[in-house]
Amino acid sequence: MLRGAGASRTTLVADTSGLKAGDEVVVERPTTQAWIDAIGMHGMFTPNWSLRFERKVTAPHTTRASSS
Image (cartoon, rainbow, N blue to C red; front, side, top):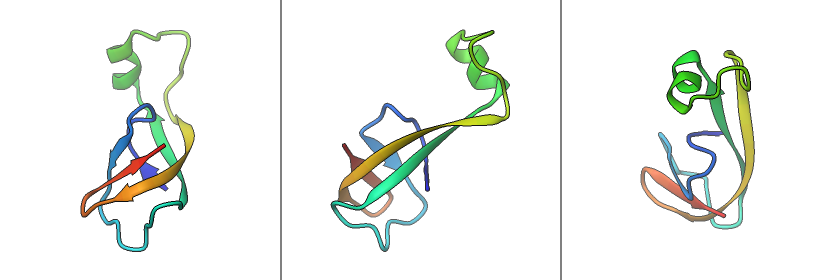
């Protein structure tokens, strides 16, 4: 599982070894109170759960993976 911003096409990862173009991954965005406050979504989101986005790796690099 990759952790990062769901809307981004590039996600920073600790290690891309084992990732190749075409791999399907899940990007997870934890919903913390600080994040909810930052985006002004009080009442829409609650802390301590995660948004998950299915992505396909298009170009793995050393510390980031591009996806579609």
